[in-house]
Length: 232
Image (cartoon, rainbow, N blue to C red; front, top):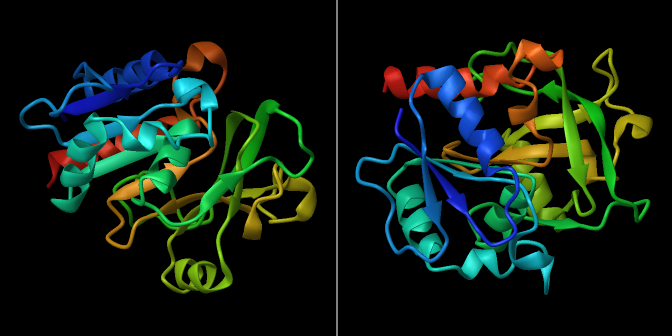
């Protein structure tokens, strides 16, 4: 698996993502600067990591979505290449038009940083094939703007097309208001593009991949990607 992790001014999770990718695939990803105009030759997967790109000025991800490298990311996605955006990366994907909707301030207007439970809605994407549909995983969130919102027509299309991959839930898998940590519409924590090759999600699976920190619930996502690319 040849992966490229895009680094923007203010990114702070790029090394966590790189560690998770190398741990699960055995291949060290390339770190690509936001001012570059091309991805490394043969890139299979592009990852937009978490952080505070460009200091979150204007709106979260709005400036990063217009960075030079994003033209190459859009072209990669248009060719059917895999793209993963985590936290700020999800915000950038929405601002770049690669995913619908937008991430607004958390409903309680506070930054949240803690573990949450996620229900895996489907296992037939390149990102979730190592999970069973309906499985519950526990991974961290760390954001102030993770409240997913879309207009009614867009939301209906996302739901009808089965493009919600992760929802906030309780430990039993019940999607209840108390588990929806940021007030996201329909408790949406992660969605995919129409062709299911672009995933954006607010929680951080890259921080739960190593038993040394007590959990490997996020590891399945990276193993899924490695497997999908090996069998492509």
